Length: 308
Image (tube, rainbow, N blue to C red):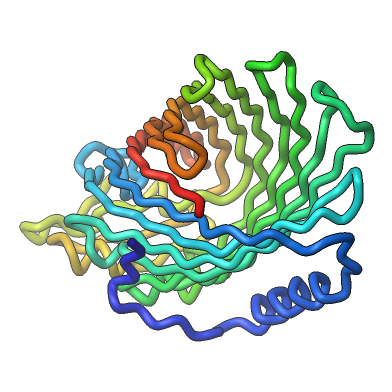
């Protein structure tokens, strides 16, 4: 189910390795109230991205289809009446139809604590999670270590409607310079059960921090683009985009900008028994970067989710 494109995983950053060891030591040091439960989570997705290059100008916009898969081993452990601990290791991969150098494989670990101070169906509960992940791309320039921390508060409004409010911090350290990024996100989510097996969900996110974008600096006919210097001046980092320059004609550059991003996700999830479901969603994103570098992006996804 997971397509890693022949990529090899090697620990490149000691910070990520140390965090993974710390998560495992934390897990082993907990005094379990009862035996943990184990699950295998899997996902297979086909999708379409209408602005993979995250470009402002239409001439630089790359559309592509992709296939994505993930499989993970999840351990759940109740600590006491109010809290539970989870540890998950996972492998994932993503392959693009045209921009093949953008394909990647990933390996990671996620640890989380769930806590409900007052027991009750309508009482809020909280989740704190930390994820450490290594991404290996066909183009080594984008190879990255990613650290993500997330805090979410969730409350059932009715027996059919649930809402969540959360914040997330993400740091990415890449082999290049443009993809060394840092951002903070706040988000609001709602889940509505239309029937006992069909759910409608939506999420609004506001992100502040680094974004990346790519553009042609030399066209396929050899002509140099003379209208991107304003974007170059506004960027905090700039380098040749090796992946797009290899897969498409001309010479492409990638640049990093300070930006604000508004994103909205809407989706439907149809369950089939307790083991698997079919999920369809669309993401709309609007990015407002320095130097008036504004662009839009839509990603459509159709996924099969399973737990065993």
